[in-house]
Amino acid sequence: MPAPDYALLLDPPAFPAERYAVLADRLAALMGTKNDVLLIQAEAVLALEAAATSLARPGLRALNIVTSPYGAWFGGWLERGGATVRNLTASPAKPVTLAEVERALDDGPGFDLLAIVHAESASGILNPLPAIAALAQERGVITLVDAVASIGGHAFEVDRLGIDIAVIGPQKALAGPAGISAISVSPKAWQLLSHDRAPTNSMLSLLDQKQLWLDAGRGALPGTPAPLEFYALEAALDRIEAEGLPAANERHERAAAATRHGIRALGIANWVEEAHSSALVSTAILPDTIEAGAFLAAISREHGADISAGVGPGAERLIRLNHTGRRAHPQAVKANIAAVSGALKNLGHATDTDSALEAAEKSYSEAASKEV
Image (cartoon, rainbow, N blue to C red; front, side, top):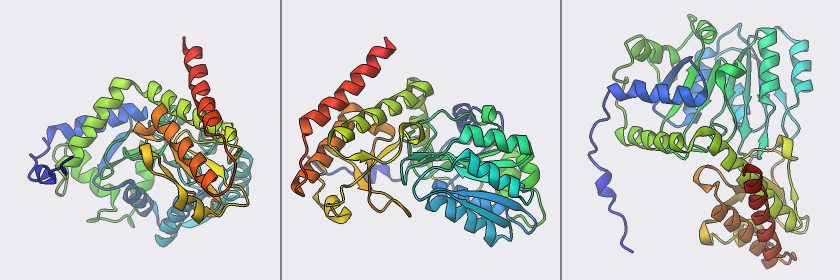
């Protein structure tokens, strides 16, 4: 098979300026919001840093929930700007609980902001966002949610949940490009963002985005947009809209359930109980007799298997089976299960690959019968 001619990607036509606002509106519809949506010309980590940097100032009091390295980074960005940050760190590689958040809010000091990641691809956990968002709203605390992984894989409706700032990226469950992200901002959040210490003339300035794009009529984006990224985002949105967001969420849930049935049939334990697990990746605990590095070295990448190590404190002995985006599909799920089984066998751990694949297939069949 000849190598692709990547020169065909050079010199693309400019993305039409009038379609940026259309893209923002389509993303707003996916997020379930009437709030402003900004298009950020960078991977979502920069969008998160921009939000933190734009909010941070002396006098801002933030409750920052840490359930992965991403939450820790966010707290650091807030502190860099002079904010007073209380980091609420959950048990290693586990979700935070509503009770822990309630106690932290009760302890004070009168928080202005609560920041949380929804679904964690680092450890396969899902934080209880609806209950936490309702609690923050009741207390009058502005909420910021990292929904980069969850949008398209979990139910996520900004306005229904009362979320003030939401950061998303299309490269995960939406299976789109990695070089664009988006931020929704409520009127209350704009008030918090509008302060005399806010950055300007900076890629990290949300006020710049507001003034140069929103207030200017949502025409041409500031800077030099990368047209291929925007054409790719359009294509990803075409595909997800044709499928329907509820169907995409269900597809991820079916892939997650089938994966976890397969993991159990291999005789290894899933890391998180079902109610607190993400539909994007499934995490399992390696047997004590198997070293994580040796296991990953033994993994076969045949048939498109995508297995990786857990990330962050507490995840050192976890393996992640990826079923995000286009990988939320029976073929990809079975490839992952077969790869895990093969690696375990190679390292002397008895497994029954056929039984594990049958368990995954049965899970899919039962899900299909419930839909009829």
